[in-house]
Length: 254
Image (cartoon, rainbow, N blue to C red; front, side):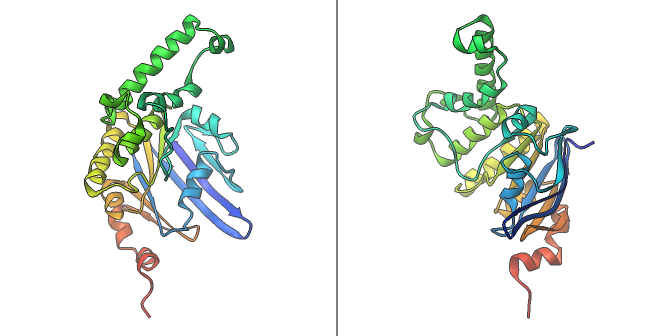
């Protein structure tokens, strides 16, 4: 059984069919790219997989557990991390505090521990700080613990967001346009980071990205969406030579 199984999901908003019969199987260590023109339904797929929306039809399994109708926070606890198109870091908090925010749902102490500094709570806080330091080192931001994200470059902020997603200790990581707003050097660095954490940590990654050169260079499998439908699934080489994909991006010759 795949680590993530999405089976024939549908999602509509009124008369708009945002997802029509989408399926995917992702295993540990695999990177799946999801591409398509604007309005193709890519982010809706992420929102449905992660519990922001509930699928109208179909099933979603994470590590063998049916998460189709689970609340978003429960899906996160089961092992799904995510970043978003727009950077969502908290101004006024340090880098460490931003990353630590994602640790709260994973904390293992009682209600009493939330009110009083019990030994269990202190142990969990120590574990959280250690995980925070670990993942900030993974993304190359360990020297910026006390900095404010708004004072850092856009590329650094993207790395902080990834570290925060890693704090959930995910089995599956969803990256929604992580290269948006980055310059070519930052895109290259981010590509290497994603490739490295996929190998070293070994979870599955789903990647939405408009920069085709990045997707083609990093993905094992690519899923191409157009108007809510999947028009191609295959390796980067297979997808690049698909007539349906060429038509969706370049149009059809008269």
